[in-house]
Length: 396
Image (cartoon, rainbow, N blue to C red; front, side, top):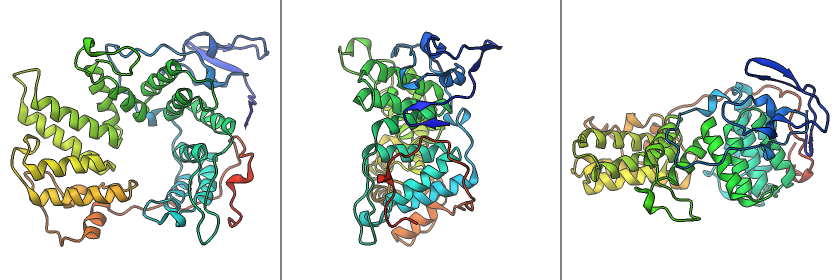
């Protein structure tokens, strides 16, 4: 059981190098999580030792010049998502959809649903709750009070720590954000980058992309003191490839654009430009599937202008469809297009007939999803909300 301002642990053992080591659960014990730097390979049980706050764990110093990055996917360590919890999560997302008018988005009800789903181990719902509780969201609507105020900082930080104990990589990413901003913790840019590197190693696509964007400089002599810009393009590509493989839209967009730019001005004269441009097109096209407005705009511009990325041939018909998708994503960033190839395949495939109506293109690209049926939630295992500010008066 987890409390807002403290952790109650019923056991105090962890595995170290295959041997179970019983730890003294006294307040004077020097916890292992504070002794040596926590890594992606460390036993998560270390974070549940008595008295340990994951926000304060020992960390390796961030190394922008590391030689290699080994890809890890967040889903491999995080708890599996239960169908009934997924239903609660999706209902909350629907209630706050950008497709609704702002005064129709029921943020308090969504927060209650996400909290309920989080109790069942749905870490994505927990992240939505945390994100909303941290900043607040919503406006008052004619049907009731649909606004959520920012919540107690200690409560928000403790819920992030709960995710960290579960092995949720984005929990470590958010803890880095908190240290960068001094949100509920002592501000420390050094610890922020260390948390982000740990999160990236654990599989956070957000952390992988953030670090990658700081490594874009071409040469070490281009680096500037006290500015988060370094030169490590090899690792940059490895990070973006990993984020892309996890279906993260921004990683896919940044990777496709980086491949395109590197192909136009290659360092290697023997590079197969046609193959590289084809790869860049596919990655950017996949980014549109993942919900990247920027990628849709990028491909619109390329096909409309006949750029090298698309074979230096103008294709206004394809450009129009990407432009339509770009506008749709601008209005609703929650859109995803898993069936994009059915209405907008890449060349040399022929384009299917389209009636020119926005909704017909969008709906065909979205496809059909089946939402699982809700079931009663499990007992609360999260830090208690502790504040009635989350509960709107009109919520049943």
